[in-house]
Length: 216
Length: 236
View 1: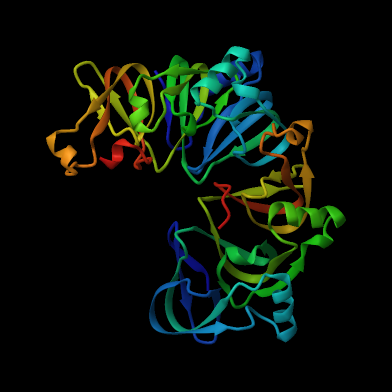
View 2: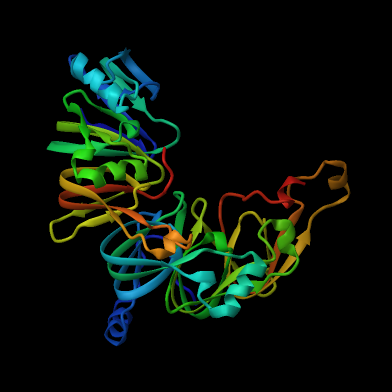
């Protein structure tokens, strides 16, 4: 059941019996029909182990399960919402940017530090993104929040994309990411251009970038 | 006359191609309304420090000390407080700029000057000359400062506004008054005066919240945003 965008900041989801939608707790704005909202203690899918995994990884944004029959509108904090349709591929996104997603999608937590070794660890610290990220895969839609509009930039092997870590929202596909630094003596003496750290994304896929450098 | 891009604005094709053969020219275009995309082929643009959100290709970022207009410019900037911290972006590829999710407006300059608040200037082509000009005493009350940034030359400039900006024409005999907090930029041959709408009742705390305005007289265009900065004048 795909999400329909009502305006830049609200999405509507069609809920049918037997189909679940997960959403950030408290993100429901309005609904019609017979719909129930159940807080999801596990913070997502999977059993107890995945729940513990998420707690440890600090990717345990409170989620709720939406079930029943009707239409539900979601929005949160006046942030812009972007709907991403997945057709068998994988989306990597920070848990706190997730507004809602289809129950048909497989959710898991990924250790980002494993990409790029020591530099991956450093990246998490520098970018404030943490070492873990949420991974969604399968067939379905995801509604992602961002400050300001979202633009999608394609990543091809010939053309890697560099992103300001603060403006990074999500990425999909077979993408390697590493932190590239353009640190020079200027940064050391406080005369940097403000662009010392960048995420370099290469491979096959797309990256979503927001028109702002503010975190949610 | 300046061309104003609100949608997918681009330079007139034939001119772009002709100039491209002479020297590399950065192409400015809007990706949505909040992101500025600049296609570069080895040339440079000046942008607000830290406003890059993404790029493809090879880019170098260098902070320009004091504005890049030599020692005099640096001293002027220090004195005036109109210090827009600028970086020079140089390279090959496409660079994307955005700031705090504000709307971006493209302005094409063909030799005339654009006056803009330093806080609202996002990016300029390297061919444009930026300087600081004295605005008169109104700045102190409007919260805009006594000085404003002057952009001159031939090329594209990107101006930010909090919400989509409207462009108002001022002609002879048709002066325009603008709330200092909503003013962002102007082009053309305009005289700026500070006007006080404060009357008797303002002093008794019964003001309408519009005690101060900037009046523009002459010929030109004024860019106004649908939002007001916090100004001293806005409180009375």
